[in-house]
Image (tube, rainbow, N blue to C red):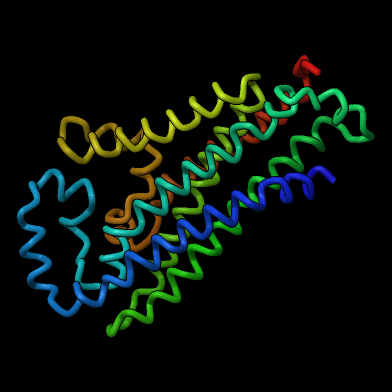
Length: 264
């Protein structure tokens, strides 16, 4: 019941965000053939960029003349950043809205436990994220038709897996905030702040070797496209950290909400 209600109430937002992200992927990759035709000119144009800036966006490693290289520079960041904003907005108010809208007392009077409430709401969040990423993946693979060369489908798949894992991690952190805090507006602000702070730390880590240590605390560095290409996939320790953070936040949200003093 709760699961279906949440899917229904968030369906409009999912459709809008899916159209936006899917449209951005299609729009950006439709430009790829012109880059591929004149890759040398494109590379010369990129030489104008300062070395630290080129490093931040992976242009020192990724080849814009290939599908996966162009995708990594131009599209992967959009998918991770914009998708993380959606994940934060989706999960941040999932539990707190019941208290803000004064529906918590009515909801908890039903024959469901608090663990079932949090579990079904979390399942709704994950389902929405899966469907959003399914749209991104479908458009991304469809756009391989723009390429004349053989596309490294395994690298593209790793990009998409990293994107989905990042979205789940951001949503899990935001879901924990929704369980612990009460004011939806404050939760959303904090969740978005975490997303943009993590992205800012990723940028700083790439601009100077002095800040390289920041890569270890930025989720965006864990899913960096250049690192995926260099490693031939998602770095195992980084993936393990994101899985661990997701699990701890999800379990923490369920445990805290189970004992929380709910305001009706």
